[in-house]
Image 1 (tube, helix red, strand yellow):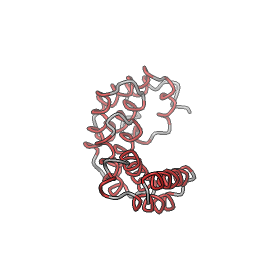
Image 2 (image 1 turned 60 degrees about the vertical axis):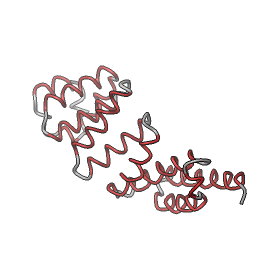
Image 3 (image 1 turned 120 degrees about the vertical axis):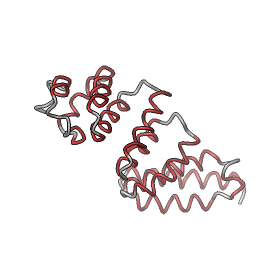
Length: 184
């Protein structure tokens, strides 16, 4: 099979895997990812078709995450992150998985490291506020929450339903910050 034919087939199967994820069908996506992976030969894996390999890692991690197989998802997600340091969604997915395998310290480390690289996304300090709240560090949670609200006021509305803040919900500082969102 020529490289061009393999490239076209790979593109088709990657699109199929993405489509299954969008439809909420991660099991089907994993099957498509396996077919796509079979199209990569070892020498092409990291050289001539690298973007497909990286995309497959991300898709596999997302499919496993949707299946709540968080520990398994971390393997391809972490490998994908080595190739794509600036990918916000990837970092959030990694942190999400670490949170769910009771590694809050790693979730926090993942997002704090990303915030240093790219501090413009309000979702990063918001998620860090959630994680620090769960970790029992009220001051850091409130500081990150305030930062996220300064960046994007709409995050204030998310706090009313966010169970990660239950440990600090009655705190005066939390109530002051979230005023207007506590009643939905």
